[in-house]
Every structure is written in structure tokens, then in C-alpha cells.
Length: 393
Ligand SMILES: *Cc1c(COP(=O)(O)O)cnc(C)c1O
Image (cartoon, rainbow, N blue to C red):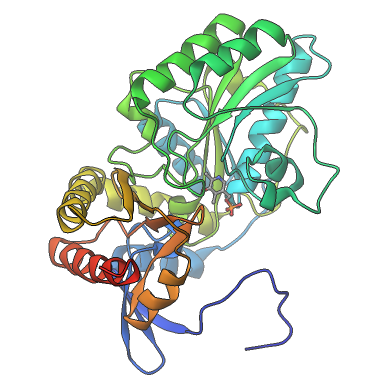
């Protein structure tokens, strides 16, 4: 490997040269089952023919023009996102952290517009919102923050899935302007609220009572992964702001800050911008991604196959000591062990299975939404064998 790359990643010793569906191939022609999908990016799997055609066609016409001109693909994607989300306006950027930066700026501006000079945003323990200064400050993991102090101020932290903690902040802190929360925490360990519907509805009620914005980070949970377009659609509420990235462009970098109602008019001319954000190539990829997910019914499929995988894993691990819990929201799947298990990533790679471990003890699976029954069966068999061996059972 090149000595000219900064050491920001502990890279596995493998280079992929092509992919097809849930499979990746190395230069020797070995085939790997991809249960990570570029960390929830490749929802359509690799080299999806209709996506490749849409991107190729767009690249041959127009890759980039500045946002100082009208961009038809961007307008079409904004319309589509608002239609499926029931939201009003979109700001396009290039990544999840940028989408959250936009949301944080929007919330602060909303506060200032309402006479709050030092606006604060409620964020959660174990949250992950990105690596820029504001988003790492919002993130609830000391490892992400250490060494980068002084952090950006203006965040109040409470435990995840704890409405009372939010209520207490509400009673004592008049500077709060918004809540930023992942409906299902991804990097934090696939943390699913005990009653996700009650939790989000409770947060919505508090936001309504205190005039706060409910801002959902759906960078990982969005774009069909949990069984609905967006995780909040398992409830009856809507957020004021929602952030997207990962699965939206199927690997062509794109992020979006989506807003509704009064929140969608907070940013006015000159308040925010992005050189690349929403360019023709990225938004054509986004539009093709959403159309394919819709045409192929991949949201419903993600829920069904995700639940099937979890049931099969539970059956495999019945009576196995060391597996603490198996939890999922569609195809966001976490298997929590009673011990750190980072080594499993390498052991799985040796068996040509691509998985991830997060929060030290949680095996995380984020397979492409297109994974079929046979592939899911192979994933369950291989992974349960690996985990049992790792646990010495
Ligand atoms: C990955 C992720 C981010 C950061 O996205 P980047 O594109 O890496 O900046 C933010 N929030 C959540 C929930 C994520 O999973």
C-alpha cells in the first residue's frame, strides 16, 4: 500500500476490483459476500445495471455545473425526496456530516430569529453525527472528540431513549432550540429505542410544546434500510428537519438536509452553500436510486429479509452463551456479544465475508437492500459459525 495516505483507517489487507449485487471480487477473482455495503451506502448492491446506466448517461451529458444556474436533476430529486418524505424543501451537500452541519446551522439561525442569542441543541449519548468540528462535538463518543478540543459549544447531552431526561432539560434550559437524534443509532451499536414509536412521538410532543425543531439524523437509517423510506415513517410523526446521505446516491457522494414547514424557510439567500452540492451527476444517481428502490419494492423487502435474518440468527444462537442481544430495524442489524469482538472482522474476511464491529462488542450488518434469501442464508450460516467459534462454542 502507498505510504502517502494518512493513517486514518486500519485497512484490511484486501483490494476489490469489481462488484455485482451483494458480491465483491478481488484481483485474484475471489468472491466476498458484502454484508456491510460500504457502511449502508450500496443499498442497490454493486454495479446495479439501471443505476450504472443512469450515471453513465448523465456523465456523458453533464457532470457538474455551479449552483448559480438551474439544475434540472437537482430539482427533480428535491421533488422526489419531498414527495416520499412528506417534507417541503431540500439543501443538497456531499456527505452526512455536511448534512448535519447544515441542520445545526439551521437550528442556530432559527434560534437567533426567535431572539435566542446562545442557542443550544439537545444531542444523545452514543450518537454519531460525523467528523467535522460541529458534528464531532454533537457526537456522543469521547474517542471521536479526543484531541480536537476546544469542541464547538451549544450542545446539551442526554441519554438516548430517555424522554424524562429531555423533559428535565426543557424545564431548566431556555436556550434549547432543537433536538438532533438518530431514530436508530448506527455507529453507537444499532441501538433501537425500546418503543421507537413512543420515543419519537414523545420527542415530537416536547418539540411542539417548547417551539424546538425535531431534527432526525437518518444518514444511516434512511433510504429504505429500516423497511420504510425513512425510519420516522414507522411512526405517525414528521420531523422538522431530516438529514440524509449514505444510501442516497448509491456511492456517488451526496448529502441532503431536508426541512418542513417553518424550518424550510429558515435558510435564506446567502446563508449556506456548497460548490459540489446537488450537482447533476450526484442528483441523477440519487434519483435513479430512489426510482429503483420504489420500482423493485426494496423497502418492504428490507424489512422482511432483515427480520428473517434476525430470526435465523436467534435460532442459531439459542442457548449460546456470550451472545447478549440481537436487534434490528430492517436491515440495520446488531449482534451484541458479552466481550469485545473486533477480531471477528478479520476472521470473517478470511472466510470472504465482509462485516463490521462497532461499539466494541456489536457485530453490525448493513447488507445491500437487494440481498436475496439464498444470500441471507449464507450470511447467517457463515456468521453464526464464526461467532460460535469465536466464543469457543
Ligand atoms: C455515517 C454517518 C454520519 C456521517 O456521514 P459522513 O458521510 O461520513 O460524513 C452522520 N450520521 C450518521 C447517523 C451516520 O451514520
